[in-house]
Each structure stands twice: as C-alpha cells, then as structure tokens.
Length: 208
Image 1 (tube, rainbow, N blue to C red):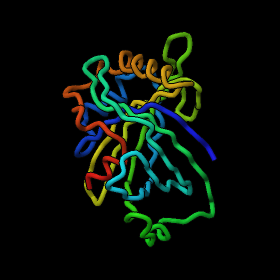
Image 2: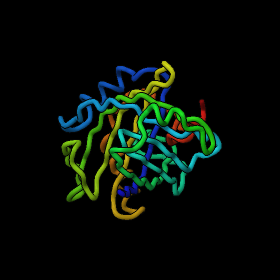
Image 3: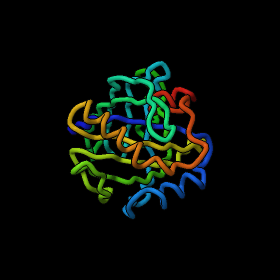
Image 4: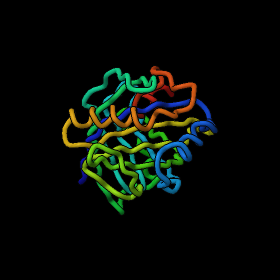
C-alpha cells in the first residue's frame, strides 16, 4: 500500500483543451521536461452525494482518496478557486478485476463511470527557495506538479488543469502552492478559469 498527501488546486473546463492553454503548458512554463502523454481509462465509483471520497480503478490499481478539507483560494496573477487537501491510498493487484468485471459491479451506491484521459505533467522540485524542473518520473519530498488532462465521458470532451503541492506538513504545502502560483502562473492565458469551476473529481463526476 502507498500513501500520498497533497494540496490540490484544480479547474475543469468544458470542451477540448484550448490551444492557448496547450501552448502555455508546452512552451511558456519553465524548463523543457514534459512527460509523455499518458493515455488511460480510469474507472470511478459514481457517488453523487459524496464529494470528500473518491474511489477508482486505474490500470490494475485500486485508489481511494479522502478529502481532509476544501476552502476558497486566491493567489498570484488573479488565480482563484478551491484548494483541497487529499490523502490517497493505492493498492496494486495484477490479478484484480478488469474492465469487464467492473462493469458488472452495482454496489455500493451506484454504477462505475469510465473516464478516458490523456494526461501530461511537469514536475518542479523545491530546493534552496527555487523550483527546479525534473523529469516526470522523478519523485520528491517537496515540489510541485502541474498537470494538463484531456477528458472524455460518453463521447463528450472536457479538460482539466491542476497544480499540486507536495511537502512535509500542511503549512509547507500552502507556502509551496503560493510560491508556485507566483512563479508558474504569470503567463497563464486569458480568460482565467472561473473559481466556480474549481473542485475535485468527485464533485465533477457528480455533475453527470
């Protein structure tokens, strides 16, 4: 079992990824280290009345996320949304259920929803009061992940942009998130995402 604790600031957008957002991610963010496109299907348990717990199967792995809190966020360069602190547990099982098995599950509270994803990431470690671009495969104790994801649900397109802070303790995570918004969001294209479009995957899935 693995455990990750992070501070997330995420927005969802209707439709395919805007060209301006793709260009910002590819060309404007510091460094040249961008992950290859990660194409996969994530299968979520649909729980429309629950926003603080997310359960999904991902490539032979069960992941459970629990939201410790959610609160409004205002940062540099006009960024505004909802920041959420998530604890994520993961279990890998090569002999676990596949897509066909999962499609037959009807419990506990609803159906399983398949979301097709094409995700790219940039990672920045934090050392000596500065962000350092690192390969996406790297892990770190303190750093930031910037993520851009194209989503499809029942043939409809959506997109998501995320900045996620990893550090020992909540105060350090908050300081790192604020520093990242100051450093990385200065060239974010207009219009900025609306604060009302900022939430985690459980809320987004509930909108269906």
